[in-house]
Amino acid sequence: KDYGELTPIKDYLNQNLDHQDLNEVLSFQPSAENLARFLFELWQAEFPQLVLVRVSETARTWASYGKLATWQEMSNRSLDPTAWREGR
Image (cartoon, rainbow, N blue to C red; front, side, top):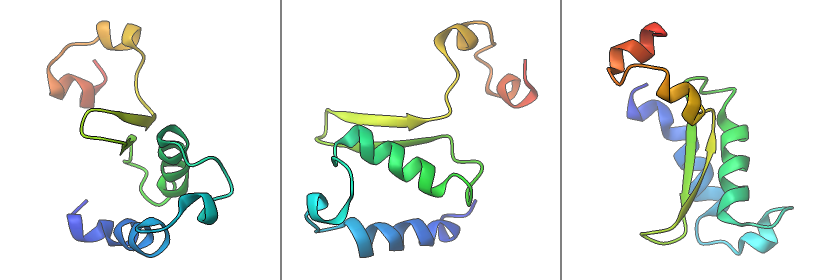
């Protein structure tokens, strides 16, 4: 998608989460892990090509949630990016 098509995500983040006390706004423990899962599940239906959400806690720590292949599945595939699109 064009970056402009991601505006609903940006607007949601700015209006609902940015500069907010997440303990007050969310109904769950606002850890990076929980936020990544929440955001992935919130936007996956509207953006089916979404495969991963990463939430950074600091420049060196983050949590990710999404639809990723397991290491075993990855090791059985070619590292050629076109092979992934073609299912090789």
